[in-house]
Length: 164
Image (spheres, rainbow, N blue to C red):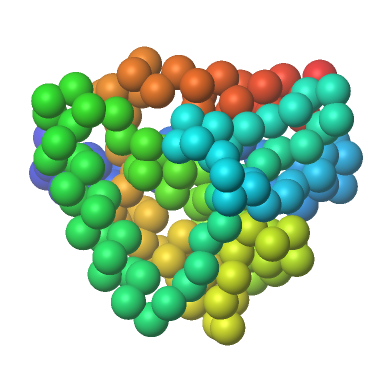
């Protein structure tokens, strides 16, 4: 029996491999320090990993009440623009945050908040954004992943450090 398109898509979401281990796995298991990227960083270096120093730099994310709707709209726009071979960097960033926070776990969100990466008054709302929203809007195949190799290479470096 053939599955309906939406059901098949949800099945693919459930089977997706994480891009990166969770924040607590990186911090406790691999002794990787997570810090906020400096404001002077360019768009291509907002996410970086120093293998020698074992430091993962992530851009700051500030939660506001309108954040959820804004992210959904930006991801939808990015998905439409991806048809024209534009890189889906925001989508990859949200997937990365989803994986780091273990789909919005309050404990993982708090670790990133302590590192200065996440700001806002309500960690539960941030967790919800990176948890529920990511599974309904963002996760899927990234058709243009090869176009942002810089970001992918940083993620691969973190994984090498964690798994070796």
